[in-house]
Image 1 (cartoon, rainbow, N blue to C red):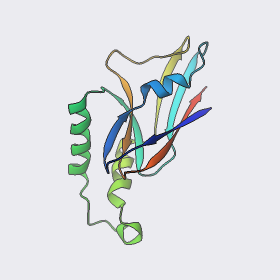
Image 2: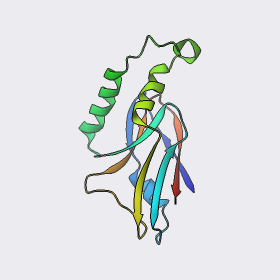
Image 3: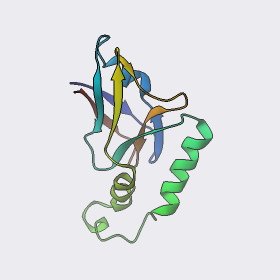
Length: 127
């Protein structure tokens, strides 16, 4: 298992971490790679790494989940971030063949920050 950190500078932002995940895979590995985010207000997805699409996703999450009006806000004021992260999900699974991530031509591993700016830890596990 390996891990790396991601630093974000906005409340909601999407960061391409494909190369960092690939670097954690041994060159002779075959199996399945799980990428897991250890946080309740961030997530990880597989999708196209295109600037406008990343912006669209951030905008969609903010539109789908209003910033205010949540019971959990009485505790720490970031219920919207928790709900957004639940929609995104905390992990993905990608096949690995000969040390290479089995992603499609337009697929990338994207880290989704819902409560930034923060420094986050991402785990990469091969099995």
